[in-house]
Figure 1 (cartoon, rainbow, N blue to C red):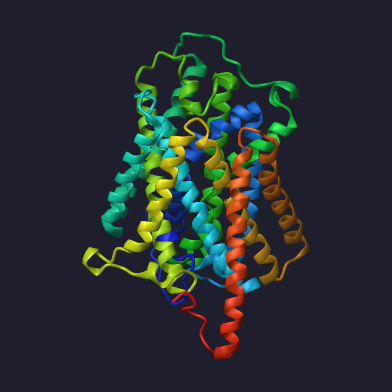
Figure 2 (cartoon, rainbow, N blue to C red; figure 1 turned 60 degrees about the vertical axis):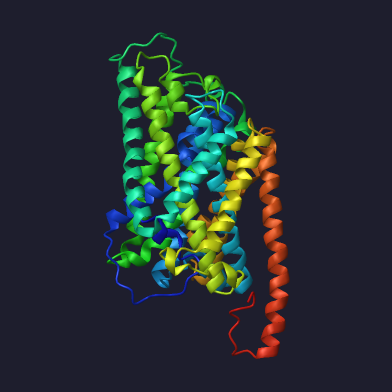
Length: 467
C-alpha cells in the first residue's frame, strides 16, 4: 500500500502527462487499506455507547454523505486531473487563500488522526498490561513509528503492505466467528444475547439527539475517501476513478454495517466502552480464549499502520507546502545523506506526537474521545471544501445541486451533533480553535500576498513568501 503516494501530493502541481500503473480494482483496495483503522475498530465503540443499535443507521448515513463528497471529487478529477486534488481545486475555485487553508487544515487533521491512533494503540495495549500508564505506551509507539519513517519510502511501503493484510484478516475473523456464535456452532457462557432490536425505542434507546451525536464517529471511519482523488493520477485509465471509489465505498459500507449489526446482536450496547474494541466485547461471552488476544493484536497492527501512514503523510505534506511557498522554506529541506529525509518536517510532526503523549499523561481517561472527535470534525471541514469547490468549478445541474445540499447538511449534522454530547463536546471546541488559528494565519498571509503582488506586479511569482 503506497500511502506516501496517496497523501504527499496535496499541494502539488499538475502532472497530466504522467503515466499511471494502477488498475481500478487496485486503487479500490488501496483506498480500503488506507481507510480502515482504529476509527472503525475502536472509535465505533464510542458511537455505539452514545446511541446504541442505531449506530448502524449512522454508518449508512455517513456512507451516503461520503459518497456525495466522492461524487464531486471524482467529477473535478475527471475534468481536471491534478496531483494536488481537493486542495488544488479549493485554490482554483476561491483563490490562494482557500488552497492554503485547505492544505493546513488537512495537515492539522492528519496530526490529530495520528494522535488519535497513537492513543488508541496505547488503550488497546493496556488490555494486557492494565497497570502501565497510557503515556508510556504512547511514547513507545511514537518511537517505533518514527523508526519506520526513517526507513524511507521503500522501507515504509514494504512495512505497510504487510500490516495492511492484518486489517482485512481481523475483520473477516470477527464476521466468521460472530456468525458461527449466533448460529449456535460456538457456545458461550451466557445465552442472554440482545438480538436485533424490534421497536423504535430499542433501536434509539438514548434518543435522537444521541443518534445525532454519533454521526461524527461513523463519518470518521470513512476518512480516506480523498485517497481516490489523490491517487487517481496513478490509474492507467483515469476515467476509472469513479468506479474505484464506488467499489471502495460499497465494500466499506458492507463491512461496517454487517460487523456493527453482529456486534449489537451479541452484546448489550451498554457493555461497550472505549477501553476495548466493541468486537472484542461482543465475543467475550464465548469460550474463545485466543480471540481477544489475536483480535486485539490485529487491531494494534492496523492502528500502527494507519498512525505510521499519517506520520509519513504529514511529513511529506509539509515539504510540499514549503516548496509551494505555503510554509516556511526551512521545512522543505531534505537531507541527501539520509535518503532525502525531510528532517525538519519530521521534527514538527514529532512535536505533534509529543503533544499526544503529554495529553495522554494529563487526560488518560478522556483523550481518545476528544482527539478523535476533533480529527473527525476537521475532516468534515475539508470534505465541505470539496463540495463547495465543485459548486464553483463545475457546471452543476439540478440533480447535483440537490446532492450537494444533502451532503452539506449531513456534514453539518456530523459536526453540530458533537455539541450535544458532554463526553465529546471538548473535541468540538478543539477543532474550532484549530480552524480559527488557520483562519487567522490565512488572513495575515492574504494581506502579505496582496502587498507582494503589488510590489512585484501581477506576473510575478508568489512563491517564496515564507522565505
